[in-house]
Image 1 (cartoon, rainbow, N blue to C red):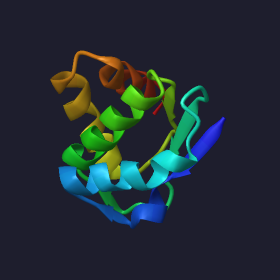
Image 2: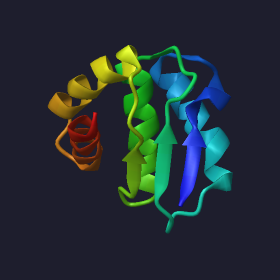
Image 3: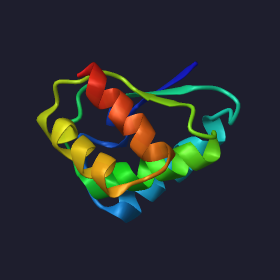
Image 4: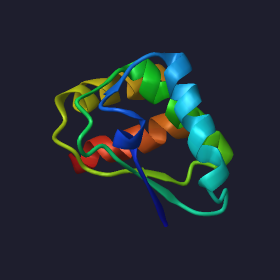
Length: 102
């Protein structure tokens, strides 16, 4: 299992293009057959658009084998319900599972 520490992309994660850029930067290091954990430690803010773009690309890449690690980050906790409601796919499933663990 691989862990992606989102703070390596900065501590303020905003905009869809930046989410895509972050995914493209990490993609060469990922194995599409391995489950990936997302760690929000030391991230101050993440917007729903950044998280949506990053998670969409990641779940498409590894067939939804993504786990969002528990966090107390208020911006993450605010973004998760937005994504869960807006999506009807692997991203929504991953987000709903994470919300149950919070």
